[in-house]
Amino acid sequence: MSADQNFQMLLSGVVGLLIVASLIGWILGKRVKTDETRSVVANLQARVNSWWLMVAFLAAAFWLGQVTTLVLFGFLSFAALREFITLTPTKPSDHTALFVAFFIIIPSQYLLIGIDWYGLFSIFIPVYAFLCLPVLTARTEVVDQFLERVAKIQWGVMIAVFCISHAPALLMLDIPGYENQNFLLLFFLLLVVQMSDVLQYVCGKLFGKTKIAPVVSPSKTVEGFVGGGLLATLLGTCMYWITPFNPWQATLISLAIVLMGFFGGLTLSAVKRSLGAKDWGVMIQGHGGVLDRMDSVCFAAPIFFHITRYFFA
Figure 1 (cartoon, rainbow, N blue to C red):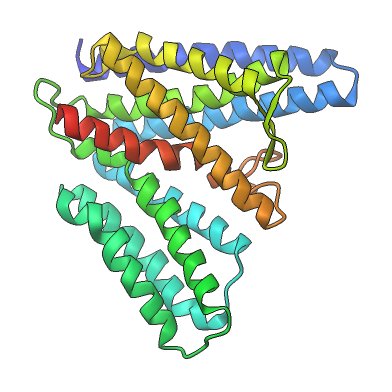
Figure 2: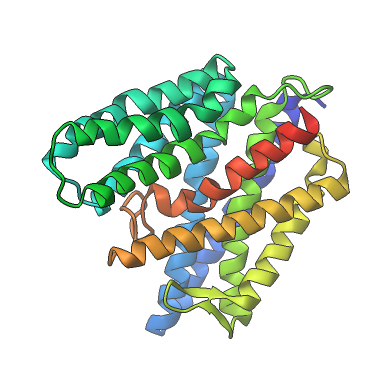
């Protein structure tokens, strides 16, 4: 089948599952009685709602083309960086560096993807932006907490822009025998990452007893991580037919996505806790902001991109 037919079939399947999940969430919401159970159901409903948004996002990106996909991810990076900077306060003297980060670095990074300039795309932020941003801050001669302020901006740009941009960068890969199908790789990545998050949450609520990091992320359990991670890996294996991977390759790559997604969620949860915040933002009512939905993608996307590029492109 063509890429269009594959995507339409996958999209239909996901929409069907979301309809079922939404109905289950609505029924459970009507039946629960205790506050604890009500909170669990509300969290599950919020995750389903976030999936509706993601499916709409992916459908729009697929049918409107690569340029629209890059623009949409550019806005995601902008919103994610805004959330990061909002929770890590800076000084007025940092405004020049922030202006460059938001209005020069973000569009430049996505432009490099659009023109297929991999060499500069891969080093633009970790080399040139990394060196440029502290220089702009140093020129203001405000040295109070200089290292801390610069590190916040650099870290925000790396996470919210550089890491996230590797997801749409999958569209630039030239994979023999896989021409005009790269969008399915983006779908594969996002589906495995997000389903891993949902399945780990569900398995944790059903079977979880041993907390992995009770201070950093109280909801993460060993049972949830193992059960949800294995199910998400199995899902990725079953989807090998939309990728250039064989079943065993899809299994190993899905496992890598699951692990890196988990590490991303854990790491950014630690950042939030250090700042005394529960969520990065309020994109979805009661369920956080862009970074709360993209924390797993931030760590998984670069690894998935480079594995695919190195072994298949």
